[in-house]
Length: 129
Image 1 (tube, rainbow, N blue to C red):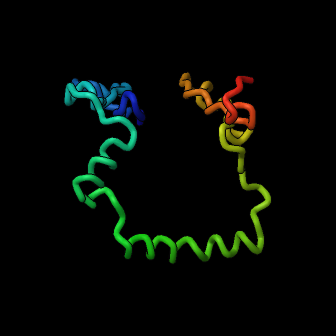
Image 2 (tube, rainbow, N blue to C red; image 1 turned 60 degrees about the horizontal axis):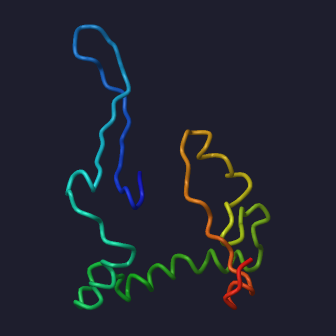
Image 3 (cartoon, rainbow, N blue to C red; image 1 turned 30 degrees about the horizontal axis):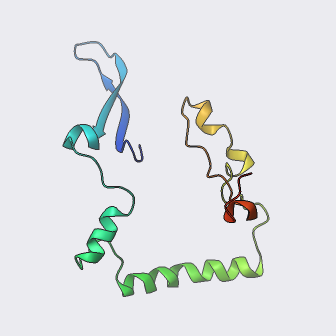
């Protein structure tokens, strides 16, 4: 799956080559928004904000859905409050994530965006680091 700015999905599977012999090869089914629709995708939150202005609630959860989600999640949060998991791979915002995941993308020939630079007290006052 690809995320903005180049949204799409690729499904890789093995298919039998036409003919009498059993010869399989890897093939790809590709879908790319930009190629399929020849139009730019809206910027982040553009669609959501437009729907708010037009009073279109299609992309929003209803109140009963929110309540159901909290009913499902609260027992988990309550257990974690009493007995926090010792091996939870938490990490600070703006970092590369848990150490165990570092390098996974590179191992598979991919790269991701750089983590957001952390904003410190000096940056908030308009000073550079």
